[in-house]
Image (cartoon, rainbow, N blue to C red; front, side):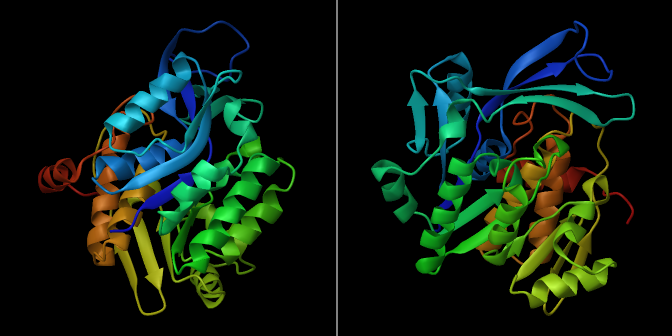
Length: 316
């Protein structure tokens, strides 16, 4: 059985309860919720019963233990998470605007996970893993980029695979070396999971079909293009498969793409047909948006199958 690894930020999310543009005046807040794109991803993997782990750091504070307790409860091997007694766990404050978009204030780069590096313990953990999932949000600091690139080389050297979700936030696009790191990761990627227009950030082509063909010709084995509530499309050299989304009432979209990716990667590695993996992943993303908080809508396989059986799909 493969063991899935991810590397990157663990943080808490604090959510404004009313809508508006940012945090320049006092607003009511709820939280802390366990969060961080790699943490959300690996929590959903663990919830599906798949062996998995994460390499990260948290402070020895309540925000750190909020995450450690949730990840361990959902089946994630947390031995690769260093608890820094002098550090502070990262945070993200989020407020929804009237149009549904989000304004974030992040504290990641100077938090405990901003000083991430491999040590003897995490190198030994890396040896247990056969698949690495990279989130673009994790490429926020030079030490983290170094750690991820070293892990990619280790995984690929023993015949393992890499999946990559760019998951780009405007707030981090200006990070030094971000573009170079994204390009390097893409060159080692087997399964690519962009959302919408992210597809064109890595291709010269101007149409979706041409961009997919360009990326597949570059060595990527498969692409899953996430389309939000409209579902997703799978591409490889032989086939294109589209699956519609599901009708749900959205409460909080944060983490839906991470849950989708975790579910698809888990079943793709298990050898499930792409169409079936897409349906389960769409269900996972849909369930995720029905709860406030990034990890609160994580699903077991039984919950996904029950949801699919009882929830109507959107019309493509």
